[in-house]
Image (cartoon, rainbow, N blue to C red; front, side, top):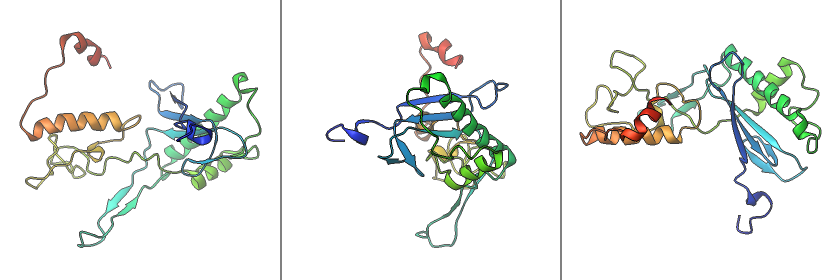
Length: 222
């Protein structure tokens, strides 16, 4: 990183694309990150042999995990179960994502740099083999959310009200990605900042400033 050479000269995600796993969808539901080097599980760069990697993430999973309190000890670590690939829908999407990446790399633009596929490898042609690869190598995208979901008090799965206050408690609010009712289709950074902007105003009893007229129409159309 100091000399800006080798693996330190890049932020690693040189290109990012949002694509549709199914042409019938009206929105992109899959994120792809292109990296100009090999990676091992957990995005760990591998200096050799030379290669490139595509990390794939389906943005609309239906699998649901949980966070559990193991004891009354406030210093005890919580039990966290992500529960990846626990639905047939998610398993089908995982397979589709790998096939999309393979289709992109097979295009003519990659002819000068494409070598033999290293992972899952040219022998992993069946859906079962691709899914087994996903099970063995899949990892977190490091954007967990929804464990304190926002919703009305009558929703048994809702933890906080629309102003961030915890149902049934006074003086306690949650303001982070855990209040999302569902995961966002994309990275959580900007949505978390907007949640913080809105709920910080709710905490001090201040309303958000109105959107300036020149931008109102643009924001309405997003």
